[in-house]
Amino acid sequence: MFLPQEQIDFIKQVCASENLNVSIVIKPPRKTKLGDHTWTPSTRTSVITLNEDENKQRLFFVALHELAHAYVAHHYNRNLFRRKVRPHGTEWKKAFQQILEQALENNLFHENLRDVITQHSKSPKANTHSDIALLEAFTQFDKAPHSQITQLKDLNDGDRFRLKQASSTFTRIKLRRTRYLCKDENGRSFAISPMAEVSPL
Image (cartoon, rainbow, N blue to C red; front, side, top):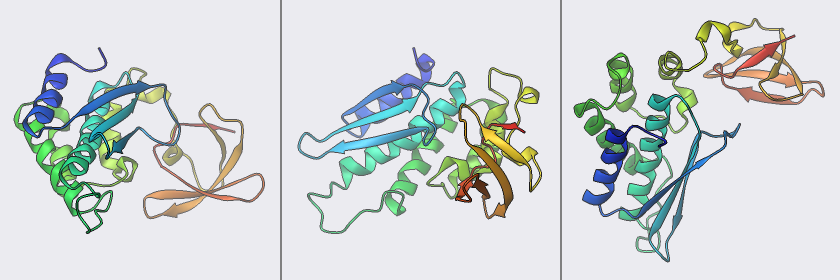
């Protein structure tokens, strides 16, 4: 079971009450995303894929993020409306806010996450990695002790590192808004999350 039964029941309840036809598929961890949503207009079905994650609090949050996309797809089908609906526009933000509020009311998140998720719900981010406070709050539920994990934010500008499960070498340059500007060995620039797990060199 990829989530506790009460969380699965909540997802089923939302789908039933909103008449959403949704399938959820668990994938091996992907480096570029925590989950995604695919909408098929011809069959009015949604497929949500989620990275396999032992941190059930984070996994449930990502599932609700994608469930909000399914809600928007079913209620604002682009084939029926001329107005284009942005992927993380007003409709998605409102849907995600409502789903998060319901989950909080049902005490489906750990009490240590209530405040940070409540704050996040006031202005949901398109990319979960943009909310550093939220990501740090989730780390307390990681299986590996957080003290054994080195993240990009723990390094100094000018430090060299490798990303987890990657061979390329990078140098941290400076913080730009919510991500660090980094350069690889060939001088190419990348914007990397402060929460990225790294191996210092």
